[in-house]
Amino acid sequence: MEVKITVPDSLKDIPLHKYQQFHKVLEVNKDASFDDLFIQEKILQIFCNLPLSDAIKYRKSDIDKITEMVAKTLEQKPDLVLSFKLGDTEFGFIPKLEDMTFGEYIDLDNSIGDIKNLHKAMAVLYRPINKR
Picture 1 (tube, rainbow, N blue to C red):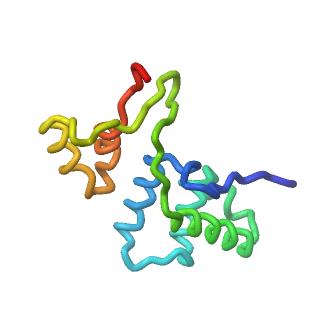
Picture 2: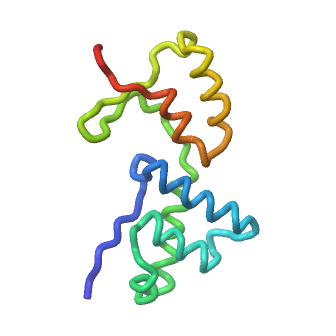
């Protein structure tokens, strides 16, 4: 039986909430490495949408290759994304950072340094595009 597993090979393939979910796992398991079985299980579950009940059917060498691919993807340096589409709405990076309000700055400052709150920082930095 042949099964296809989708493995992210670019940071664009990893939604922020999945990265946050995995980071939380790493935080709780600070001494773990990408070779640890538990971390490999979580990589398969979170990034490849593969339930553990299916993962145990694969060869260990294949699981090692998949987790290595994901680890390399997570090491990539992200590019600045100026715009993206989510549903029917197109979002763009705030055009002038110096024009943000003091309240927006406070929200950004309070959330950008904590991966758990990174989605809040993105809400300040990216806005729906109303005009070009």
